[in-house]
Image 1 (cartoon, rainbow, N blue to C red):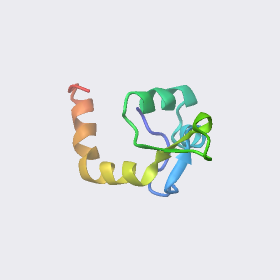
Image 2: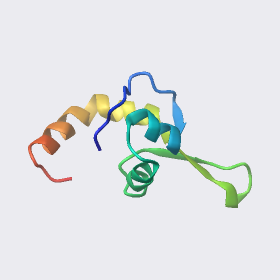
Image 3: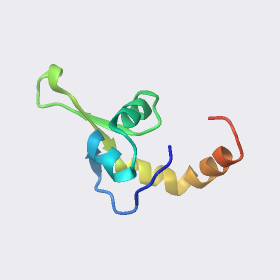
Length: 82
């Protein structure tokens, strides 16, 4: 995932479309990253199991990036395993 946006000023949670727009990828790409477990999420419901919405957990993403992100980026640039 190539991030084109600034992740330092994100709100704690964002819906998938807003996150996609913010970082410069398509909503389908974000859905794929969520499905594959690449992005931390929170699923919220209004009480009906049929109406869950998935939000990107930006706080967890920022924490991961600050702790391990630089190492991951270096691995990707070096052609390391995903």
